[in-house]
Image 1 (cartoon, helix red, strand yellow):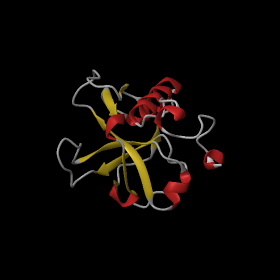
Image 2 (tube, rainbow, N blue to C red; image 1 turned 180 degrees about the horizontal axis):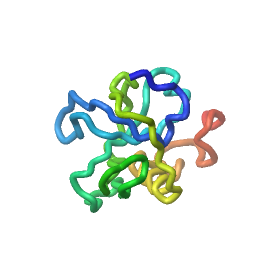
Image 3 (tube, helix red, strand yellow; image 1 turned 45 degrees about the vertical axis):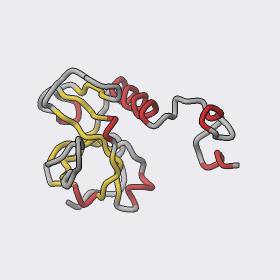
Image 4 (cartoon, rainbow, N blue to C red; image 1 turned 60 degrees about the horizontal axis):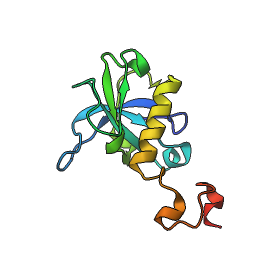
Length: 140
């Protein structure tokens, strides 16, 4: 699918997640794009799979997504603890690209990813020099 390389953050795309191993989410399913444009320009996206098989979070890192949000036809769960970086070539045609617009859902996804990736741990607690920033100046 020819997806434009910009404006994908917070988009929900239909993706082919196979092959998988173990407990990874597989098959063709929706995925929420959580990465920014520099990665997209390289033909990659970081995504969190979305499932509609259940509506109640069972684990930390799971965020409810209501029906109607970003074209979701049923209530579901964004699986932030299964974030993956994949090729944009995994995207499947499925109509217009829709975005999560709810500030509450976006905030919950950001918080879940921060916990999952340990960004909520003070930098000095895991050997980083500083807690000041995570941007390009963080290595100085």
